[in-house]
Image 1 (cartoon, one colour):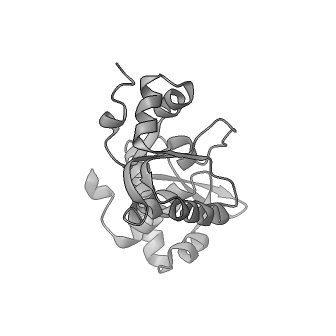
Image 2 (image 1 turned 180 degrees about the vertical axis):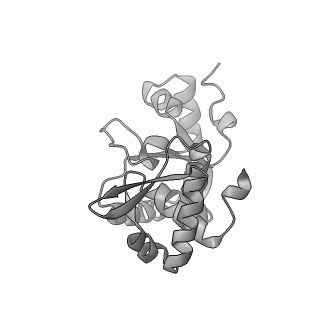
Image 3 (image 1 turned 90 degrees about the vertical axis):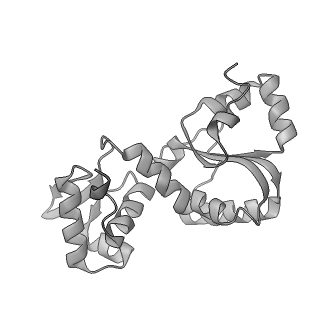
Length: 195
């Protein structure tokens, strides 16, 4: 089944486009423009992806529009891979050396799927000795691209462990939400929470 996914550079670009804009429907010409590939290559990949059930299409006003199928068996795994290589998550992973010594960083699945955030939601949590101006620059850049605010929280490792040990409601709520780990091990992150 993995052969269905990673056959070509064009398919990888299309997957990144669909999974970073999960709520959108795309016309072939818009996909071509966004991924900077030839129209025939894009059409060929969309046909294959539709055949394997990765994308679905529908007709609207004489235009065929495509979207990624959220019921696709590897949706969550692909979302995680794309989150680590594109957008906010990709920028954090690429810049980890400049960001200080990060123990854990994760991004909420709701945020990745394009869901609305309430004031209490945390889209991104970073734990460790953080170079705050670097983190703020990455977040500000992503907020400008998305044209929306990103709710994030950061803390050093000692504060994180203290809050977990005290069973702080904020930390517990953030830790139990569906997430994609960008840096660090999820089992280690949840030690002391599920005790």
